[in-house]
Figure 1 (tube, rainbow, N blue to C red):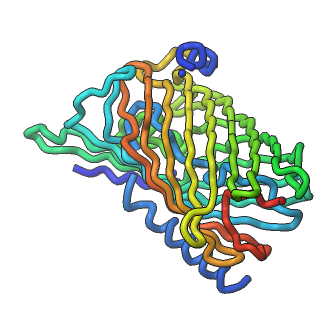
Figure 2 (figure 1 turned 180 degrees about the vertical axis):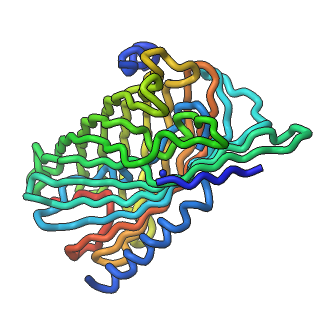
Length: 352
């Protein structure tokens, strides 16, 4: 049985406790953007768990574009949620499966040589199939719609130059609740993480530090963000839900590979506090995750760059029992308004 619901979309215990509280290229870019947004209904998320939600920033290692330059990114992200964990122990999970598919539109614009603004918008589809080995047959629940959006203002404290092979960028902003957080199925309220949106206005702090080994053309970086979530009313004044605050930290390296390809290696750490419902902790929410990502980037032209990556878990420790990610696949296309003589290679420093 399939329910199609259209819509508009732990540093261990110490951390968990803390977290509780106008060219051919452009036409090609536009065509692919439409395509990625249209294929979102082909795949999909889970029930109550703290699996990573919609990836609201894909070009996380991007610094400050030069003044007046516009960089647009379109990303298709598939998250296969087929593992079941209790703490650090994997359990046998043969009765259910989950998926999420996210289409992401990201816009970066250089306001000055030191200041830029980033906006990200999502369309998500979530799917949960249960009863895979029951005599009565399986049931699949699907939701889809516009997800939440973010806007960040970034400031370059230290600009990378010919004499300084490093940069330090800080930023701040917020998440706007564009997606629905009160969908129902046959009159029954759906779990919070089956909703396309969260319903809450959240604050975000962000920073990036990178260093370039120019003799090898290798780019080292770390990106960190912290999101403070607020509560949101869902199905009435007595139903207020608040997702746990979230820390994301990435360390990575990017460099040249065969021919014009470049590689990217990342260690991605995420810690989330437990969710709250009417100020009471929700069981089986919150935890720590450490993933490894391998990616390849190819500069199609001096304005276009394409990127593909795969991500697998290395470690996870969840609160209670939760379904969690088996792997993540992602493909992105980036367009730069300004031509770059050496070719547009997203993720490499833009202001050197």
